[in-house]
Length: 84
Image (cartoon, rainbow, N blue to C red; front, side):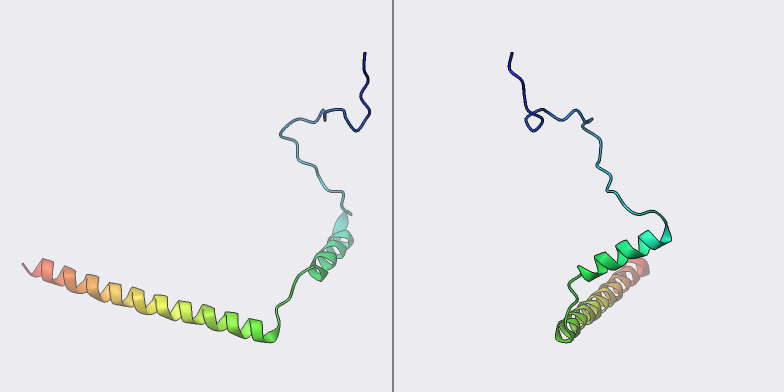
C-alpha cells in the first residue's frame, strides 16, 4: 500500500467552503486593516485626475445633449400623431 505525503493528499474541504481571512477584531483592527489597504492604492497624479475628470464631464454633456435631442424628437412625433 502506498502512502501519500501531506502535500499530495486531496483537500477534504467542502467544495462550497470559502476561506475566511484571519483579521483583527474590533474598531482598532478595522482601522489598521483599512490604513494598510489604503497604502496599496495607486493614486492618480493631478494631470491624470484632470484628464479623467474632463473625460467624464464631456461624456455627461454629450449624453445630456443626445437625450434632450431624443426627447424633443419624440415630443414632435407624438404631437404629429395625436393631431390626426
